[in-house]
Amino acid sequence: MTTDTSKERIGFIGLGIMGLPMARHLLRAGYPLTVNNRSPEPEQALAAEGATVARTAREVAEASDIVITMLPDSPQVEEVVLGENGVAEGLRAGGLYIDMSSVAPSTARKVAEALQAKGVDALDAPVSGGQVGAEQASLSIMVGGSEQGFARARPVFETVGKTLVHIGGPGAGQVTKICNQIVVALTIQAVAEAMTLARKSGVDASRVRQALLGGLAQSRILDLHGQRILDGNFQPGFRIHLHRKDLRLALEAGREQAVPLPATANVAELMNSMIAQGMGDLDHSGLAKLYARLSGLD
Image (cartoon, rainbow, N blue to C red):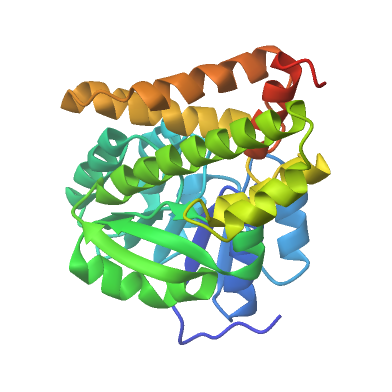
């Protein structure tokens, strides 16, 4: 695949269910791309398409103008960026770091402060849209950090997403993401409860969904995840254990800000139960499977 030498060189660390398709979009858009991942298979797939593979995060940063990470949680981001042979050791002054993971707002602020001391701008830019959004380059991207950094990153964001919003300073993107995850989790819970009640009452749940889609209860989650629930298709687009992690971050932020989040705590406990029962790798719409089991339908 031909790269465009006029484009900024990008490093991408974390080639999982979201990171791999995002990195592939950047490569296909002509960005010179250097990648690193814990397991070699995604690296090899992108290398076959023209990417360069680096052994460490530091090597990725040394070869890049902009480094993007897409990692599971706060500890991994801190290790990859601030740890030995990390991004901070390799990015030169004037570089840009973009974390597209979902992590604690406090982690985003800590990383931004450390990098700014080295003359490197930092953005926290978590995404919403799941695997499908990553594959279709239709992600919603919520950005914290400087206006200048956002303007510089815009062409990169436009390659992987459709909705780009600069929220505010460092950490603001991560606050927005956990707010998003609260709304998504509670809406999935509501749809799961409604579909389970319909089934247990002997009513056609597909017709219930159809009726609700025409009224005030209409939502994208009722549309998409309601159909998943009807089909019993819980193959992951976004796994339960990852959503539970995001709700943990929300509850931690709630404690820090003295904001009560009782509904969030409730759905997080339901997800804990699913993980304990071996269902943590199901899609988050799999909450309906737990409700069915509790209701004697499964």
